[in-house]
Amino acid sequence: MSFTLITGASSGIGEAIARRLAPLRPLILCGRSSERLAALQSSIGGGPHLLWPFDLRNVTSATDALSAFLKTHEAAVDAFVHSAGIVKVLPMRDMDCETVAEIMDVNFLAAVQIIRALLRRPVNGRHLSNVVFLSSSYSIRGTKGQAIYSASKGAIDAMMRSLAVELAPDVRLNSIVAGGVPTNMAQAVLRDPELSARNRELYLLGLGKISDVVDAVEFLLSEKASWITGSSMVVDGGLTVR
Image 1 (cartoon, rainbow, N blue to C red):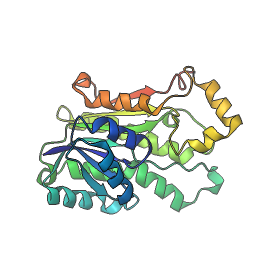
Image 2 (image 1 turned 180 degrees about the vertical axis):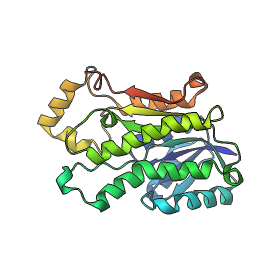
Image 3 (image 1 turned 135 degrees about the horizontal axis):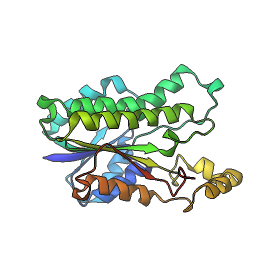
Image 4 (image 1 turned 90 degrees about the horizontal axis):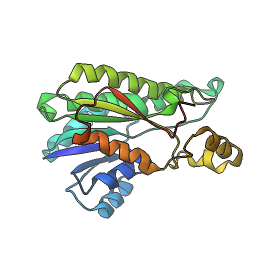
């Protein structure tokens, strides 16, 4: 049976994507917390859905871990949504190598390792056909304290474009350049009245909803997007055009 693999499925945008797609297709839900994944699985219905509790900070073992998981469950992956992400707002002078590595591992290198597994014929055959990366407006728009997060999202956008060329026509790859939506990671900013007011002024259409990003993911995974690959779809309420 073929599944859609969603990383970061236990919270935020990843969880919302899982809830949207659950009635439509079998899912593999990846997240750090077994308990939260199990709670999600019991609440979404549909399926059959599989749980892959894995901490993507252990990036060097991700390829082998996913390969073993698919073999154990006799499963294949035809679509992959990389929604897992870490945000740490720090000025560059306070960055250390461990923090840089953690952000890059989860936001970028984990996607590399997962795709490596999914392209191996003994592991996944020729099943993979669609990949969507969750990127950020920070990949194309500078902001204070987000240099490494921005770099990680810029890296995943750049990789997407090259892989779209390398893997065509068998696999479509796209990313979603998302603006600010009220996830748990964004709540600290949204709770600050001054920062919240400034952000609201920057967005031509106001702050977005998680469902705005989920709509874009659902579209890119669908046959309605069958002639779209190598695209960074901007979903940001007009932030980057301003």
